Length: 400
Image (cartoon, rainbow, N blue to C red; front, top):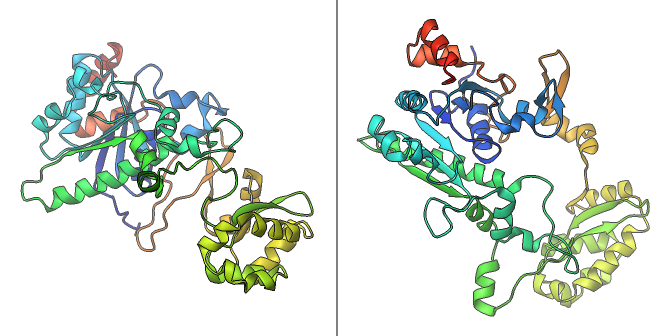
């Protein structure tokens, strides 16, 4: 018997494009929710055409939309809006990432949704949230990373801020969208009236929420945390060090006992027992001297030797992996994080595995991101009872 997934029975209507809402939809779909992705009839989600392509379809699309059902609706016209409302009656969750006010202009705001389904949960992702003076400004993840404070901290102090090499702001917001939706589902299921609610996720707030103690540090002392390159300010030692073979290694020796083990492993027992370095604050005050001692040692050993010695000493250590290193790594392989799928042309493709791992009801990949409108007939006939003739008429008019 096929194992039941934890979100089986939850139906999600995904109205968003590109990254944030679809990333959240991907997580729902991996763990059993029925995710029905609504796309524009002509071109669909722009992500279908981003970056590396396979037979006119982005390989990113195959990952981002796996396990989802694709249907097409023109939500800009009344007949298309009526179809969406009919689907909302059958849904538990609607997730979207349009500019605030867009759904309202399409007669698909929360008030309209709850009028047909009082239990509906509307999860909204936007640049600045649904309220406040910036709410109507267009917002992308890259801008949110800047406004949210992350870009200011990324890079070296003598150079302009840089971006992380992925759409991290969008995906952080997608994670919060999933968390918030699951909270709302639990609240609804515990409510005797089964009332839904709105989950409001702002990209900039998702980023801002990760800034550790930066706000209270500033408020208390006026201190502004700046870019520090490879170091972790106030936490020592934690840095990137060069090895004898020209490769780099990340070492985290910032626990009191870990620091002692690290110093003994590199032959610096004097520093391991020095009272000045017994606490993190003391080490932070002398971080340059400590880093110099560590790199003097790493420069005498290859990356492989550094890892072996520090692994034996139980000190957190690791290389800086590129994607080729990841593909070849035995731990990624053992954890099933490199999943092989088959493309429409029969080619094999590696895609990321499922996170997190659940012991009893794990997620899985059922199918790759579908072709545009692949599930029109299934969804419209099953949930709305439309006939083939009605589907043909809607298609001819560009509604679906």
